[in-house]
Image (cartoon, rainbow, N blue to C red; front, side, top):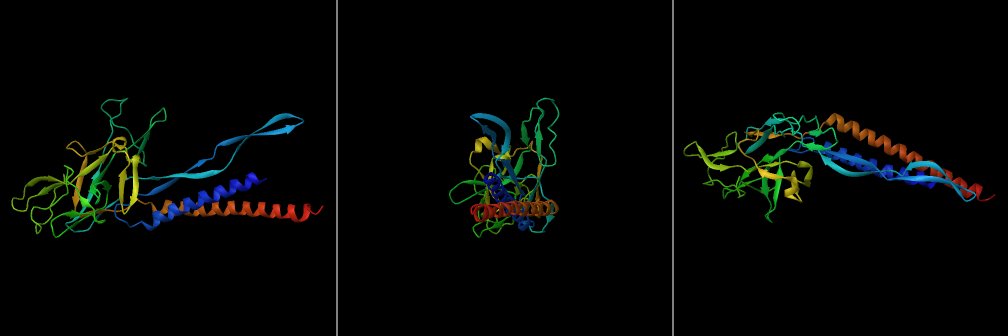
Length: 292
């Protein structure tokens, strides 16, 4: 009888995590560059139930031992671009593709969540592009929040205070601190004197396997294994555009997240009722049956 109690308790923990994830998404509905998080639940391993009778065992069947929220998966789909009018605001518009190895000359057909599942079940995620920034320890981080500022020294900083890098992996800095930050559609900085590309480009990283990224908070991600994530700086063949004076809104689907949050609440409530039932049954067994 207690097996069901433990199963219901595991369900409550899982639904609480689902609810927390949905709440986090709603809170960041208007956060620039925020990527929606989905909670993935998995079942505990099944156990084989047998009935012992006179020294012989009869197979009853398999029973699941509960569920748990194993991980949170970020959805990297592009959010809407909103015009801000500020020269230090930037957004990325991307359409990165992956060639289909089975059909030369064509690309993989990614679904609405940004992934492709091959006939043999192998999952491929759409590559994503990020602005590349660097923390005080020299670690490269990746963000879609292009709300930048220019320090008095001419250094370009992200909204989190990180140094924005150029395409060579060096901190991006204006030639003169008083210069205005001008960028063309390919991310090339425009020289204020000549009006021509200066030869410096904003560091835009292409992450071939974005599922390898780890969320750090403050709108940035890092890669525990850059090789596994297959990260490189963008080149002329990548289909992407830098939009100056725009910011990327979060990609949170408010309607779906609200539905998920309510569903998690109802499932939590149902598991709670099961535990209350077991508690009542145990109380009766102790107080009434025990007296007999």
